[in-house]
Image 1 (cartoon, rainbow, N blue to C red):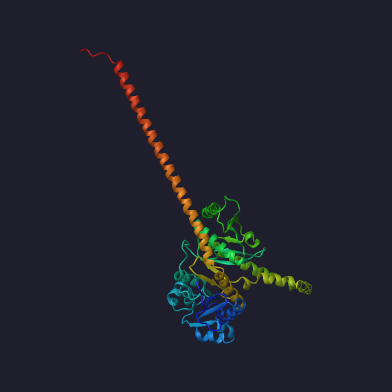
Image 2 (tube, rainbow, N blue to C red):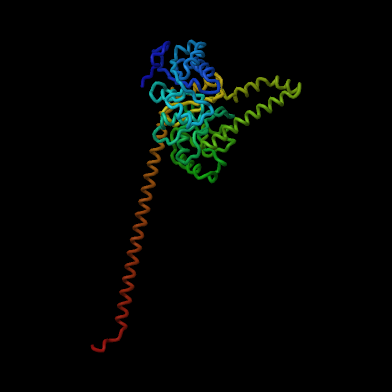
Length: 410
């Protein structure tokens, strides 16, 4: 389908088809000050982009004045309502449906006016609005939140990080499919390795849902992912697989624990390096190594969670991000569109569904055969028993007749 930027000035129509990104300009802790500057930075890196900016028109215009290049590639659409960061999803839906900057950005994707929506706003509200407005892809029951995770090997993708709580085996398989599709785009791996987060790597360990999902993934042998089995918590940071799959409750706890641990280590290290003149000198000598470590752990470089499973691309930026971090979230959205995330999910999901149907048919056939065999055996046994009983009765009757005395009248 051909895309255009709706007549936005300054866009070279001879270029490759543009990626149209709808921004909730009012989202996050800093609002337009971060989102507009971030969009301008993303445009420098991805010049084949254009933007729809939703929010308070005056506030957006004030920030946009500093970025004439972005102004030429953007349309501003006024939204009367902004969703607060502390607002409950139910209240956000009541007050912001159809009129908030967040809803309007998502709706632009639904209408085909944009290819992706990006917001740094309230996570719960964004998920609720996206699910209601866009719905889920066929065959996907629930969406998931996936994000990049820095590891010893580079980066991995972890999901679900809290879009929903709890998961049966089928949903965990869906998560594996969606996460592998994202990994193929972001990590540039043709067949990503996938593992299920568990309390141990042995097959006997874990809750029944996780063990059942493991069996499904092993049996399916899906062509676009390489299932490796169970992964323990320490395996996430080690980067033992490209994609780590877990349900949202455990995933969110793992995320918050990792963030807290990283902050703790950073603070402890800073305190230790500043205790004496000697330690300060050591820190100065090791400055290059510390800068490298800081860059690797800088959350701005991995910002941008992807709501997977929706009938459209929606990206969640961390609310506290500055322009650099928000630009990364915009670029994540760009990559998802340019590399056709939704098609990759659909293709693998279709294969998995075909496998499930074949498995169900085989199961039904086996069940029917077993039922027929049991029925035939029961019928044969009943027939044999009836025959044996009849013979026994006949023999008993005959024996009695032979052994009885002649009648007196004969």
